[in-house]
Image (cartoon, rainbow, N blue to C red; front, side, top):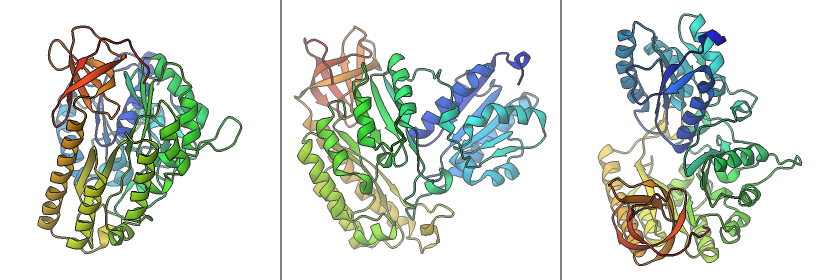
Amino acid sequence: MNATDRKTRKLHVVTHGCQMNVYDSARMTDLLRPLGYATVDAPENADMVIINTCHIRERAEEKVFSQLGRLRQMKEAQGGNMMIAVTGCVAQAEGEVLAKRAPFVDLVVGPQAYHRLPELIAQAHRKQGVVIDTEFPAEQKFDHLPDDAAPQGVVSYLSIQEGCDKFCSFCVVPYTRGAEASRPAESVLAEARRMVALGAREIALLGQNVNAYHGEGPDGSAWNLTRLLDRLAGIEGLERIRYTTSHPNDMSDELIDAHRDNPKLLPFLHLPVQSGSDKILRAMNRKHKADDFRRIVDRLRAVRPDIALSSDFIAGHPGETDADFADTMKLVRETGFALAYSFKYSPRPGTPAAGLPQLEEAVKDARLQELQALLREQQNAFNAGTVGLETPVLFTGAGRHPGQIAGRSLWLQPVVVEHETDLTGQIRMVKITGANPNSLLGTLLDKEKIAA
């Protein structure tokens, strides 16, 4: 695209799925900004619409095609001038199908190739038909992203690792995101510094298997996550650090000790276990047992007694019996979770579990409801247990109602305080006075700003 083409263009991005997709959408926006694209809130008048897709859950493709049907009407209303791009994991897994079923789409781009968007857009302007790029390039996309990222806010997300080598039987990620790859440590640290300069006070490190991080250090050696966290903690102005999503098999003793030794690492960990049944864990190819997870939890709580745990669970994986599900419920009761994400099993095409005999939907639905009821009970109990505490809160902006400010606790709970002054970016002591299912109420204490 030459300089004369760089007039102001309107860009609308729709994001589905995980926080990594949110990060990817933001970086695609950064890539297109130098080409004259400015974001708009609605697609109707956009010059370009990007749908950044997720392939984890059932019927993901049909949701995309439903959205594409509406975009087709908008494109026709514009005389065909709207450019439509499908990116992300559905694009990676179903690129050819997308091109055949939705030939009005201009671009289909996998999650490892979106750094090529400017070049691909130029190709789309020159040719008829769908431009498809779902390759796994040898170069890391992060090496080709611009440094001038738009600010994310007080809480910012930073991708440091992508892909997964675990090949769980239910999961499509290794096929859509590829093998595990870690960003060089200096690249991560440089982006973190830019985020802090733009106002970030908390950074969440992202990866499909983030605690398997093994990025190259400045001296050529491989850095693990613990070493990276230690260096991040030295960034002035960065007050809080956390990471997600982790695998139990990469939860080393050194990383566990970091929850005690690193003062900026939040006492919160998302550690998916998926099932409490060893038989189902074997069927899932998780390569750990339920008691391995319990030992990790015990060790974490020994070094950091106030740590809160979050996890993922799947109800109704092929082969799961009533006894297997009872083992999951037992693990949940014994462990206690502040937060959890639970789903009924849905077969993903191309994964090993998709070819196994499936449980009846009614059985999966009943188990999921029982599991979610217990997890909600635990979340409510955890929130109620914070009432009366005096705890630091990072304020992120205005509340929903006039005279309110909103923030986040050490355990990521939303906290609402009645206060007229904007405290965005500050960490202040708050006494928790009430607990709702999804948020806490608090009173600002008359104390000076503190470090996390």
